[in-house]
Amino acid sequence: MNNRFYSIICALFVSLLAVAQPSKKELSALLSDDLLTYSDASLVVYDLTADSLLFSHREHKLTRPASVLKIITSVAALERLGDDYTIDTYLLRHGNLLYFKGAIDPLFSFDDLCGMLQSVSGDAVVDTLFADCSFMDSLYWGPGWAWDDTPWEFQPYISPLMLCGGCVEVTAKPAVRGAAPMVECYPPSAFYSIENEAVSRGGTGEKFTILRDWLYGTNVIRLRGDCTAAKSEKMNMYPSQDYFIAVAAEQLAARGVVVKNVADGVAPYACDTLAVVRRAVGDVVSEALMESNNLCAEAMSYHLGALYGRLPVRQAMGPKIVKGFLEYALDMPQWYDVCDGSGLSPYTLVSADIIMQVLRFAHSHPHIYEKILCGLPQAGVSGTMKHRAKGTAAYKKVFAKTGTVTGVCTLAGYAVASNGHNLAFVILNEGSPKARPVRVWQDKVCEVLCK
Image 1: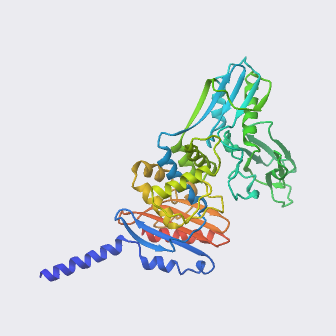
Image 2 (image 1 turned 60 degrees about the horizontal axis):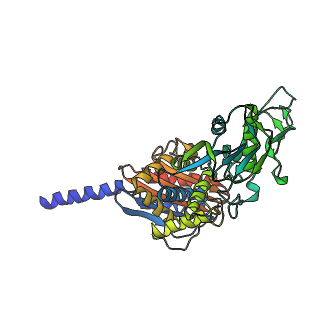
Image 3 (image 1 turned 45 degrees about the vertical axis):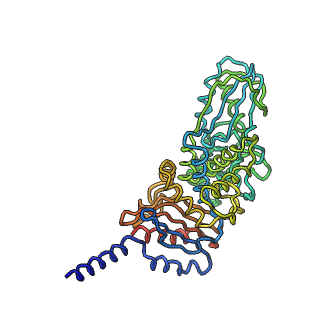
């Protein structure tokens, strides 16, 4: 009787284990998919609740992480900078001189700018309005960034003064047939110009495009082709600090303030603070993860670099701090490289195991884990995962960062298994020219984890 009871208990325990863990057989079968005959994949799954490794495949292989690198940047920023850290933009006065002093606030908006300008008297005369860009050096892109990714918003010209992410949003709508489309720009400014060469519903079939004349370094935005429906594009502005200060001068003039000149310059030590906008690092983390905002990730990287205590901050300083975090906090060996904060650099190479260690570190520190989990896109619900995993077991149960550059498609984050266990996973795919079939395969992996 006792032996029979013991056998029943053992059988029940084994069946519960089968339900509690994702099927290794199913995961192994996915690694035999035709997709991987011409491309490669690394995969690691860890049960955070049981503190045990569930599955691994080529976990030490170095791969370009794309935007999944933002997880490492965000965790390092929260750990090294602290929850209370802010990125501050100042409006300073020294006699009849005004200075905007920035530190790469990636979320600084047109409303923020107008709010700060309220501190300037409407009848004031400003001899010179200065852009103080002393926080960082003049290198506006990371190492290896693709020159032809401009003029799109995901690769802005980074400077300490970033207005609307250093971009202008251009919206075009068809007018009467044969006429030029209607165009609206935000924020409004004479810093850029519009050349509207497009036609509304012309029936030509020519693709409608909105592009900045980036090849020649101008801020001329050209509309061409057949506009048959409303379309919006965000174009980066060159250079970002000049764009910021030009819009500020225009808005001051609109309020009756006389601005005689604009220039670059470092604010003297003895200045009066007229206004300040403070951006919490948690807000920057959330935008970097949820919307895969490259500027947010790079801003965090520069502020990590500022921990060296030397200005201007050089681009390479931030990645050095991140590598120090990986080495000392996680005891990671030095057979990897981190060259930027966003994952745009082709020189950044990490392994699935390194990313997994960062996910586990975040989970073991509740104040960090809460911000990371809240920032990660939810499958089928939000951010870059909004349209993925709907109708599957992974729907609403996966919180993960996506990453995509040509030839690379990655996914990493957390999942909830059917038994309630919290899992961490990392999937790094490379070698596929198209991202769509890779994402379908990754969603199958997530479904196995959650069912």
